[in-house]
Image (cartoon, rainbow over all chains, first blue to last red; front, side, top):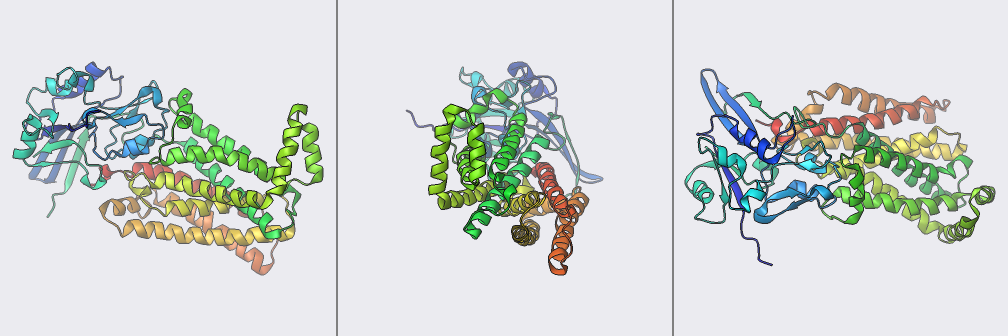
Length: 182
Length: 323
């Protein structure tokens, strides 16, 4: 078996995001996400004290962590690491115990009405066909960039090499792969 | 100066997840509570049998291992009801996941049944055995006789294994929560011993609800005093450990030290569930006052409140609390 060298990652440019929610709708349409649930979402944060305010808009989703606590917590092996380090849930193995939900530092998972646990898949079914994830493909401002961050030629590696970035809750120790360009 | 966080608005409103995580409800509280009592019964009844050397004096204690297995089954039913994908529950037993405490727990739960059955058979006296054999279906009687013979021959190992299984079950219910680093309040290894101590105390309280031999009752009350004292020390260590750690720990401890769950934790768990029954047990044994059934009832209520508060507050304690 070929040793996995790819590490899929996404960058979110907080200087470009206008919070239009096209990524949220594209995901819902592409992945048939049930009403009332979402696999990706928009966070608007305002910091500071008036009048010195700083606003930040972020498109957030599962961070496909390199040290994913959800995979470690899963008692049945349903939550697993797939190609490119993508964290997926095998529906037929999931008992719906919700240990992974409690283990997730980003609260990115939810119970699908059909009973299994659901979350962002980085649209691996599209990526396998050479397409970009649905959210990335519709983003009108170019905020979202997806790719293999172990490939120095990839757009995502270039962004990470040339821009300042941060991750959410690095103190969780999960080593997330969703990077926010600042 | 770091900027003051003014406002965070999210479009996410996933049921069970937002505004604060609440995916585990009464089922898990009930399971943790019942699991604790079962752990207590196993350790205490096997401990009494080991200490006496000549079998259990109180008649009512002899079927207790079977009662414990009944309570455990009720707890497992609650666990099963909590599953969102119930028909896939068998998946727990299709694998062993060393990194998942829930996987460990699923296997401990299975192993405890045979141990409990041998523990039960060995605890029965001649009359009890005769009654059991008379009630058993004929094809099972030979197996029952064989198992009873084993349980006699290996009485001491069975009792020691029962103590170990009970302790394992009690510890595991706490460790299950303690190994979830993303729930800040549960981020403490003290939760394992705390839930074990609480299990011993609630197990003792459950047994004290029944008419017991005077000497065994006094022993149980003495052990219960020790368990409650240990619980108080562990609660203190739990809070000190969190409050003196980094920002996530401080935020979590804040939920019980001034935050949302402060009143319910200190009033129901610490005062009503620990301090008052401890004082009542000490008064009873030191001043030779008559035993009142209110004491074990308070301990049981306190044990239930401990699990409920820690489960609810723990789920709410997340990295999103931090700026």
